[in-house]
Image (cartoon, rainbow, N blue to C red):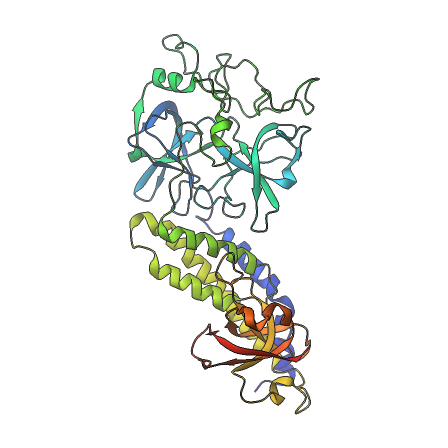
Length: 461
């Protein structure tokens, strides 16, 4: 047993656990290899996918995510290579019309609601086509620069969170965005093919450096993203041609109308497809993965003492067992493994807090409702909503929590979950201390117990 000075040394842990966890995350983020790998610039050339559904990825690393799946007719401008283990990747410019994400704090919505103006330097984010959320779309689309204040962006749609609130905007990516494809997935093609695909004017003179999108005046290198006027001219409806590069010559700007005269935004809005791009259907396990990622974000916002780590760990472990053991699923498995490691770390800290709570002065004998409740109850505790089993991300369950000794209104450890039953009016009993009657018994060896209740009785409000 701990007492005296040793207890005084342990108790401060309770107050500083979140800060310690933050320090761990900062340390991990700063380790070599966590972040972008180094690329080697090369003389620009042009490539096309060797087949349909070639993946354009946000980083030249194994932990990357898919930004788009390209059709074989797409032609891209390449300007760098990167060797990642045994694989070599090629850095290419975004195809026209490809979407990106900008966070709310970085922009303001212009009059008319069709364009946005950058209000602080922003790198935008590469959209994750398999998990198109703000949290899962974390990589910037510019490697070494940010959009300056005043840049105009064409709005595609608002990006909603799980509650239907706008958490970011989807926009047409401006000129200068670059990501990676596997070198084995592309083959070299000609400048003529590139210019035809981009809808550019006639071929440049022999020997000239290829003209690239955003360089309609014949400049030899792709210009950086340039700020444009922050206020539309009179009569401008904020959607009639201003783009992020500021060019108005119509000579094939990335994001402008393509050779068919169709605005790429028309093919992006709604389902994030663009010219030459198609969203691939999610593999069977990815829908579960997406839901768990939403739950993970929610649980991480919960207080450490009452967060539902055990149930989320259980769900991720089941998912890990169901993911097919194939090469294409390894990035997802790595994400699942990292989620499990962090959840288990936080659960261990949570358990430490529960141990420390045992050193609090106990309540007077016979005064706790748990002690005086009849023995016929399978479990006694405070009934709460579950942020994991909320009926949206995962099936609806109600959570029975231990009654906190020092703050009776605050929950503690999860004792069990109960399935909803209209006859039991569980929503009306939320936040009350209840006794649950079930034909099932609690299995202390299980991290998650789910009960089929036959009765749920209010013992204390």
